[in-house]
Length: 215
Image 1 (tube, rainbow, N blue to C red):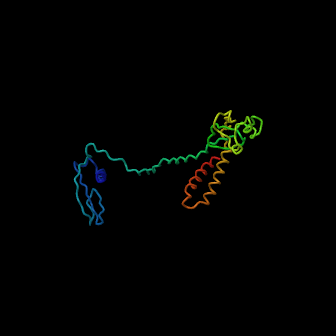
Image 2: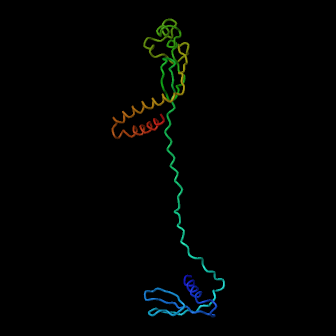
Image 3: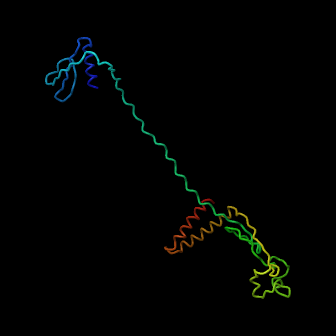
């Protein structure tokens, strides 16, 4: 296409209507440079005469002038969304309970079921355990058995009643204190453990550390 453009440019200088055909000289220098002109080539140049029609071929449309190619903007890749953070290990669910018999508070993972307790321990009847379990109207327990109340038999005859500790979900501050204490105890055991026995303590320490992150 470039050769055709050059040739027609030469013809434009000669004039389209000068003759039915026009001659164009193709010249090649010793260095290999090629040029087209309307007169004979210079000395030392290889020459070739080309006969061309004086009119452009039917349907010929000259190409638009070359323009500098617009720089192609580098493709901008979409930002990679950050990986979702691993969910923190939630705190354990604990219950704050108060013993029905001794009135002592404690924490547990699940409320205990109802259990039997001696009436004498609960203050009914208003007499000592020896009086409640011994004597002609007592439950018939011998002295060594007073430390281990009977759980079987009719409740009235055995002087027992069913009780249940009062429990409610423990507040977060109590749960965190419980987890912190468990972590300290596990860490102490990890330091004292032999290498072959350390993996379970290491795994529990990781879990407790993840739970403490919620405190």
